[in-house]
Length: 530
Figure (cartoon, one colour):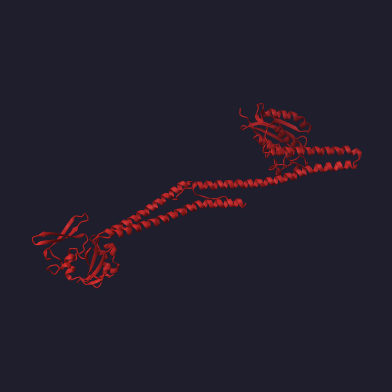
């Protein structure tokens, strides 16, 4: 199971990893603590509580130097190995000497769970000594006891010593029996058989006052060092994980910013991880996409600006050239007197053409200005359309156009700049008049559609070429590129779109037009709330 889901937050991710970090440390601490307690228990376990039979194989093979003295006897303990007569075969400390048979017989025999106790009291004969071997249960109940009583002269008053020849115990034998020799040690013997079949004795010297301080200190110091080592390893691992998780999205963002700064090809950042980093990468992708779109728009605007200048120059150059040529011909007397009025008429026509072009350029530039605003008033769109068609009807009739009018009786109130909106109608109707022959039908249909006023203006003429439909509202695109009349500045529809959009509406070329119509335009305007 992953430590974070696709949409988990960075805080929750940190919390989960901190929990995993804590659990790992707790598990390591528990293991180390158990190990330390086991070793501590082993260090303070008395030799009388141990089963030495598990070391018989080691002893039988003669690998005395491999005997775990520190574990069995603690720090300061040592061992010797003797034959059945007490001759020392191996010792860890020099100077002890051999044992006599009687001395070896007086060394207490090691038996697991058997403890030796020594007590003394005064009697008529003098100081008596009781040496008892007590067998204890796991619950410290006395199971059996083998008492031995010694008189003041060292002879046995009660009991027996297996292997002892008899008579009074000498000082060394008495010391081994009563655990007073050697000084500061408890002495035990454990029988085993060597590989040669000979009987031998393992003599164990256990420090009477166990030097547990150093042993336990070493155990717990080792435990602390190991725990700190585990802590450091886990901490470094978690730090590396955090570093990778944080640096990975940052590196992706850095590469993305570098690509944008150097205008190289940009690829969206693909990242899955904590929610906050995903959101940052997604926000960067949106920003980069918008910057690229903005750059493409800037390039397109720059190209349009260059085209605009070229088109303006072309549109102005043609009439100016005609005016210059005709005016020079009249001035130089190259025109017969009877032709002068015709030349002056042509000059007047071209001057009017220049005036119209300049007015169109001025109006378009005014609409492009950021501070351009309309002066709208609430008015009935139906009434505005009726007034316009009433004024335009004679011109349509003279041009041979047949108007079809469908205007509802109910008012459709909109916020309109009447002068600007009439310019939209004039542009649409003027284009139809310029590019279509007499007998063309024109449709003016106004209706209510989904809370908006919908105006359809269509003609049954030759229509608009398909290659122009996508850019018909762009500046300097003229329909007569396909109709060969070469009239107009190509700004009429561009101006109309800006005026309609400034009213909060939209204008589009219906494609394909409804049956029976060649070119059809749809204007949508928002209605005022009642």
